[in-house]
Length: 160
Image 1 (tube, rainbow, N blue to C red):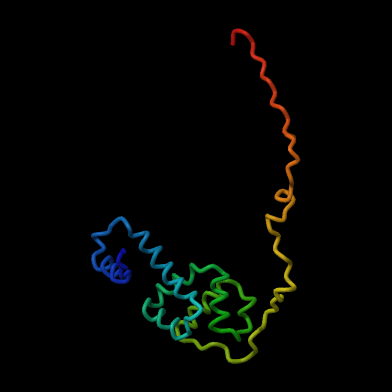
Image 2: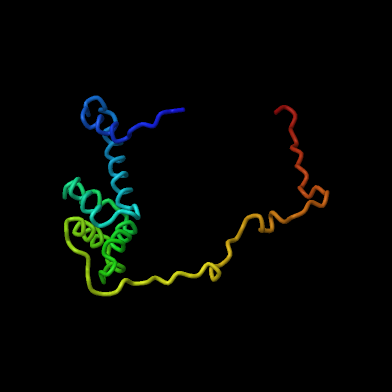
């Protein structure tokens, strides 16, 4: 049975001696960004946790990570940490990213307004999923006859 590795200990070792790992600098940056984004997207991360990540990374690094978020990711973060903000649903991507950084930096969420409810269709009202097994290609039956066209014979010239 393989032993479980302590990933954080390995990352600390890599960070303590970067000269021993010169060829993985780019991969380390991508992995670090991926880990931070994954932590931000967890549903259990409270606003205090977001602020703690901001505090650990610092303003500049946190802003660079947030600037690289997709619009949908930034919108979901704003909707979770500041659900009453009136511009949260319609704002452009750059505003959403700035709002995430502001909330992480200590700005309080909006207190006025209501949390907008999105209408979700009930499961029975949703259209049934089309399954491949029910498609006409899968319901065909073989009648015992070969319906494929016969292959053509290629005429060869003598001397070729």
